[in-house]
Image (cartoon, rainbow, N blue to C red):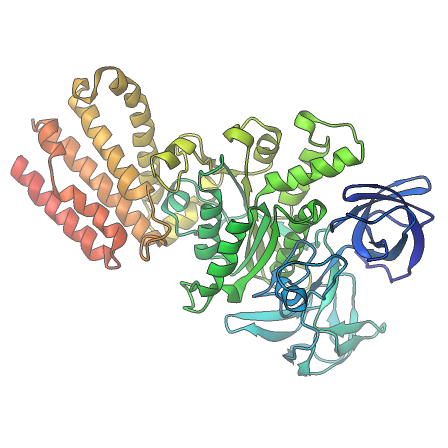
Length: 583
């Protein structure tokens, strides 16, 4: 997608309705960026009706009035891609918030602008191609050590190709010329890309490697593949944001793009203050060294909220094209849909279900389709984008349009349950309504990298939890003592799975992250207790005696102990001894 050259064309404001402005006497194309009013507020063309051009403005339009000038830049809304993206905190249109704070304090003034990348920072560039080499869009021409853990690969802009006419290693800013192609195209450390157009790739692959999250319920019961998509719907207070943050902190993605889209200010403040102090479990360095944060809180202009999702997706695609595994967290897509609904109503478009625009499902599908595991142009390396979108259905009603349209395009459904949250069971994922369609494609990876019987244990675990749900209806009527002895033992095993396996403390130094080996061993030890219990029943031991076995409680201690292998081995050994005495 070529970026148009800057050719300013001036018109005037004809009508204003909140963030939607109608201009006249301006020649523009769809999605051109314009400057509105005397303060030159940034906006984007979203509709052209004869001589009238409809613009959505990314800033507050209070006090601007008809007759003020409107200038078309002739360029689509684009982001600057290059070294310096990592560790940055942006708003929805890639203005760096720390830079704006230095200029004007805690409150952003209207009409202010700042480049997305530091124009003065020097980067040590090492060329990896030489004069005469043929390159296409996406070819790596050199590298820059962006952070100690991330090697930034400098790419030929996607719309350029030819032979290298000149290139040289050295220390450069993002605006300096580092080389040229034979057709005169200038190569720099950075290039721009329009946010609403996905970057093309050579080939899309079937995702076969899991995104390990460090959260037991996800990794074991409902795994997500790298390059896959997942939705986390849930009512207010169910733990969407904490779950998203845990995934951002502990997933094994190489790059994390976190979009706070229309979230409350205090939640984004927690992210912005906490992330710089978190340690990456893989490198021991700060997590921010591989993270880009996009903060667009609920009190920021609604139009910028709509753009923030695309800004994050474009940055994610850029690192994907370098061959990295990227995790994109969108919190939450419901606020994004509400922004579209507000703008649509001001455009006087025909409303769809619950007032959302008729094209809601198309927009959601377009966004989630930007995920995937691909082979980019210009290289044989693989890169991936995994999108995890939080959904905030009003009143926890999963039948509302945003949730339903999201489920049509996602293959992993992590349903948050308010009742579990009220019982202080976190993560409050309902294991009976959640699902993952990646189980079959990831089965080979788990069998080869964790344990050959991984899938068998997981299926048995789910069967026990489903059996517990059926038994609970009977228990509520007649009590657990009235159940057959085998079912009483099943209830106890299900309790151990819930309390010792599914529950996880996101604020405990050890339990906040659980590696796959520990996940497997915890589940295996619980199921070992189940095997011993059913065998004891067959030998005539009473259920009540089995329920009083004390050694099973040691399994829970392993969650909070770094030396979990020793604790679980001890628990298994003690259970064997105790059951031998029973028999």
